[in-house]
Image 1: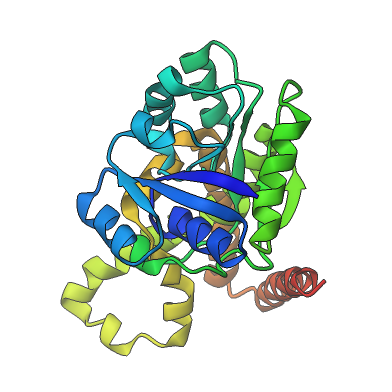
Image 2: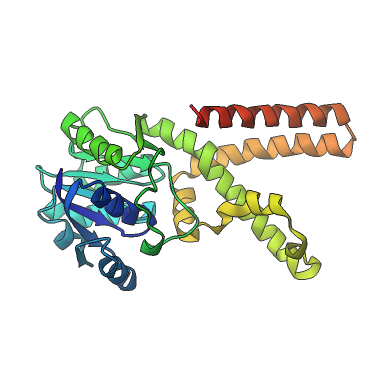
Length: 289
């Protein structure tokens, strides 16, 4: 059982960790740290956290498990704030959507990644943000990827795995670089495409009333464009190499589709659409396993 859990960044992700551990009876008390005073007050008033701090070092002191649940662009500054109170007896982890930059930040702050720091990433979320969106069952059945390094203590990894398993998550391990490559394809690129398409059609909508006639397909495809712009800005900058490479590949595939349409290549279009449909079905079949 976690005696004193510190959640730095009490939004959707961090707030759901706090709610879930409390509901599972796996935590004694929860300390919330957040720069947003209104959000912090809401977390306290709703019982998501037991005590609130706007100072990272003060909040994390004397806690046995610390979760950094801020946007990836803020993680280095959080690590700097934690350094004076970093405890060898505590365990630290993060929830960032990119891992290479988090590890590099830890190396800059500490000289080497501390052995009691376990980089992690829950594959869960929603379009809403803030503690008001937190759900105690957000992670039930969801995947969590941990990217420990060779020097990471097994006991620290076990503690973080236990945290996620008590929230109902399925935990797996992955090398940091491979994580960033996989997530660029499955999460980062789709978000970029949704943002770009919605922004483009939003400009056209001013003249052509496109949104007035948009159907369910548009709503489904662009749903993730409702996500937090600041968070996704940081993710794109943190994993720019992988994302740019995929955008170049996607551009090449779009040119192929454009050519098929332009030249009325019915058989080629049918084959491409069938291949895509079958690939998505394989994805859905894997979700059911």
